[in-house]
Image 1 (spheres, rainbow, N blue to C red):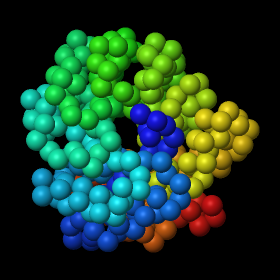
Image 2: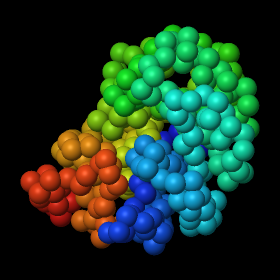
Image 3: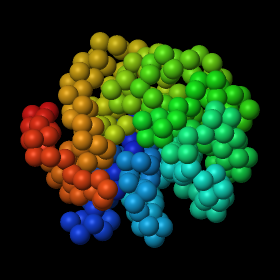
Length: 291
């Protein structure tokens, strides 16, 4: 899965002020990624507010991105949840012909054991018509997929090809990198440690901040993969303040504020999420204006 090495971005779903999907804004955002060196696009992940989209809206987002992308970049589709049967059903019934892989998050809220997590992804791997990327984000799911479980899944199922690792734990990430097969990709899901994870042997990042500053962030990850450490860290520390800003009051409210300042789309989010406060907005606007 060499097409997943580098910088992927977790695309937002822009909304109009009356909370409908902003198709034209989505088109601008996709082109902005393509024109500025992003390597692949992740569709309908957490950042895309997929949990508050109807099935019809999800299909609209998928169709719009496929149309604009025109097969220029690989696409990854987010299909996950805490009901294994429903996830399996969606993976086996949705048209995945335009996608290179499926990104599936570990079950949230019901807090399965490590064996439960293993069996969940085992059921997915047995039916998935496309390669599967695991997604570990304990800050959202309330359960951590341990390296031992990831290593077991990577060895038992050749079509489980990667993990988006977003526990924010470098030691855990390094254990995954060292313990999985050589062709298994450990992809950072945490923007602040994306560079050190890449330098430690990771395959790059699926980023949120990267879609706001795609040219610079993708260049940083390329430098990391090429082991150009000083050049990479120069970009990292330039972007880092805004990385803190965009997550300070929740994702994707922060990155939508960046896009609003860039003039690509509005900053509307759907309840139960709310937009960033005035003070944080000023900080984000100032950073973008001076970047």
